[in-house]
Amino acid sequence: MQREDFVGIFRAMDGLPVTIRTLDPPLHEFLPHSKEEITALASKLGVDAKSLIEKVESLREANPMLGHRGCRLGIVYPEITEMQARAIFEAAARSQAKA
Image (cartoon, rainbow, N blue to C red):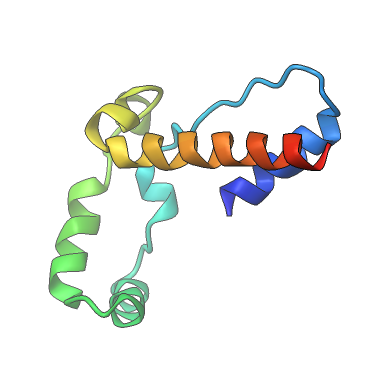
């Protein structure tokens, strides 16, 4: 999904410099909130609902501004930064190939 967003950005900027800010949100904003939502997601993912509930609870932040903001998200979950970097590079390559 992000790769397509980045392709759109590169195309819209038409060769001009682009600064991309990687994700730094409070993670709980992207997680299901109720047990019903978590259970539904667990079913879709084919994972145990109890373990997903525990994971969601462990990621909930009491003060999001002191949580996974800025580079801290990428330090704790480097796979997120790796995914975003790959999406940016692939989008840049795709945009150059079509130019």
